[in-house]
Length: 531
Figure 1 (cartoon, rainbow, N blue to C red):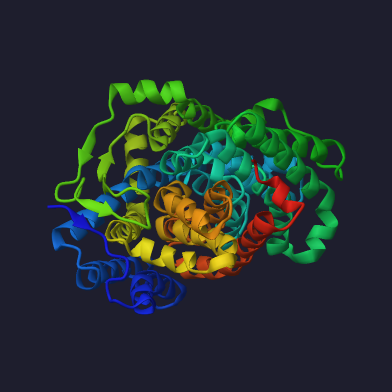
Figure 2 (tube, one colour):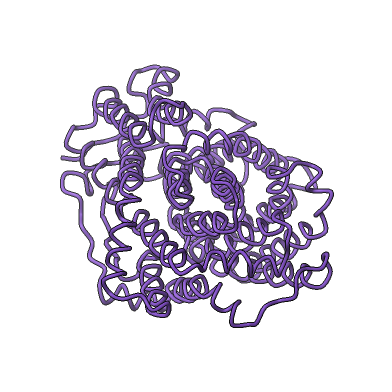
């Protein structure tokens, strides 16, 4: 039986909005407290979301449980699959002393930990975002920063802050492709519009990163390197997004930034110790080079299509698939929602990481039984985090299929001429809820287009704003925070990470909103909107 979502179930807009916000408020408040562990906070948030879905929105119990089940499955795969295998690779490198060698190798590029941070978290992180996305960059860069001697809070929080500007073009442009699918807008035009918003923040993020790490003094002492990292990322980001499309934006931009920053640090920065024999560099970076090779290969559309053709089973969720209907004004045309779990185990980024870990283990001369023992240890280490992520995603999917997300979105849509500002914050909220810019675009892309037409601003601008604003929510979504705490092996301190990044997320999202507001109404910013 088809169930239609209701966007004012209590007959009062304010009360309905407060009810829909309750699961997110509970989750974030519990995460920010010192008394509740992350997995308990996630479970309690899930209970609240299910209660609102069933008791307030009147969603059938079986549908609500199916939605939560689909979210939990997605949390374990592909997100949990990525985390588990990154930790496996990390332990293999640690077991052979390669983390110490990595630290030594990077000090031959720069002795300054601030610039090591920019090189690893911003430049390398952007490459992994562009090639794989879905939690990979935070997991990898968090582990690398720990290996370089950064404290767990800095390694976690700064990795999250760095993973902002690349997110909209992550996983070979997947968020923009998904946005085009739900809005029907031209793909290149969407890419252009996002590419006329985020490069401004790509210039800012390296400076922001160092300010969060060491304050204004750190910026004064490193500004040349920060400017090089930002400019050599932002300019290719603009050019590729505007003249090619969304697919290779992050990969190309990150490569330019890595090469330019490394060149500057080697030739123009204060002298560093004489470089060791090239074999030392190769050994130190070998696990991460193998990882890069596999992730980049898996990210190629032709390879992904070939692997999916071999094995990509899809499971339609019983009691949910094609049984939930979104209605106006969330969508222009009402249609049943698909609820399908895609178990693309062969083409998943986590599988690429797993294979890179196996190859690394062979190259490091681990025996088969040693590999099995280390993998079991990794599984034991991340088990609580996997449970947490499953509960987080179950909460997110419950809010999505029950329509609680649309209730919150419509509250933003009622802001009239100020809508361009709040529309960007809607994207921020969507990523905070779902943990994914892609999911946020799927949820709110259609709503952004419809509301923009009603308000009288460019639908293209507001659809792009959903993605650009969303990237600033990436650092506070519960899924990313748990990924960071797991990668840095700082379990139970998720509340510290949330407190560290929360203000940064809010301020950056506000700046995106202000830029979108200017692009909507104020020349010369309004000339940035493609016609």
